[in-house]
Picture 1 (tube, one colour):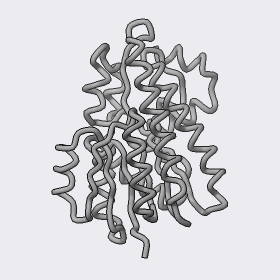
Picture 2 (picture 1 turned 45 degrees about the vertical axis):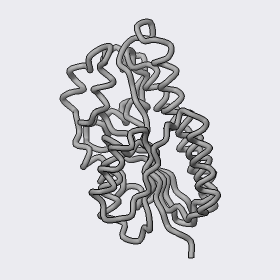
Picture 3 (picture 1 turned 180 degrees about the vertical axis):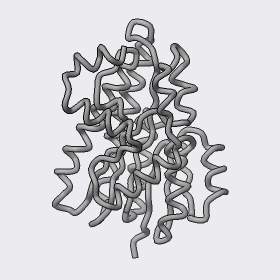
Length: 252
């Protein structure tokens, strides 16, 4: 019998860590949860706190060697992947002129390239009625000055997820794009290294427990889009209905 697993990237902190915590309690049929992040000590702490068997994979998904390790492990174990959660990612607040080229291309490598590579590696092992959860962001709805590259990477995740959902429908595998607004995690410790988060975003900070709970429920229900909270739902509708040029003037 194939081993049933879930794979979670970005599992050492924030949203990714919260996904593992809730999946540990929610999905008793999983044999293992494979947790991926660079910080092994954080992953070991998470393993100790979970009842489900946790396989710790201390990998840097921006490195080809790490992606090769994951690919070989999947080939050797040949598990049945019931849930893939791509939660790795980071953002830097600041203008394109102020941020370094490495900071900006780093966001593209992790938020877009690594997410795509992990998804491609896992797809052959997904079974009927499996789910893919891709962490996008409400930043995907609208270009954001001083968050330009991050918002663009999340727009990529959103578009990629929608197309992937159509491609996998025939296999009865569903994709959910999770698009929260600001969430109270370590994300902003990194994001604010060059500039501060706008005050209006602080007002809409969400609890990661509630964001993840909503995301899992929406994925279980087969929904494409998971947006937590009325403010972000309104932002999504506004971005669909109103000219982006007008909205950009409002957000400045």
